[in-house]
Length: 140
Image (tube, rainbow, N blue to C red; front, side):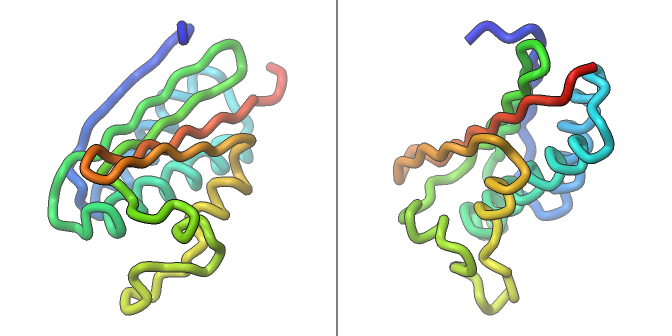
């Protein structure tokens, strides 16, 4: 796909980098002048995806998370990649969490799907998981 603009960053799978990921996505998307609501939606979806990668994928034991942002016109594309998820269908079930002892809500994918127009997940054990999200911003 040929994007009008794009940016990619890699960061260590540590909980403290979740805020960095939100700011990276927000900073990149600022050039499209999104509404506050649109920006909040994107930041929330990115936060959920990155948190899932760090806590459930890497179990806070290190590794790299990749965050990509791109756009064509007013349509934004976001990808988050990390360690593979064993059972995607189970992970997508509302209220399911692999970390109940951490008081996780199990709503990560549901939240992503609520705030973004499209969410697609590709996962292969030993290779990794990539979450693709899309959202069309309102007219300028």
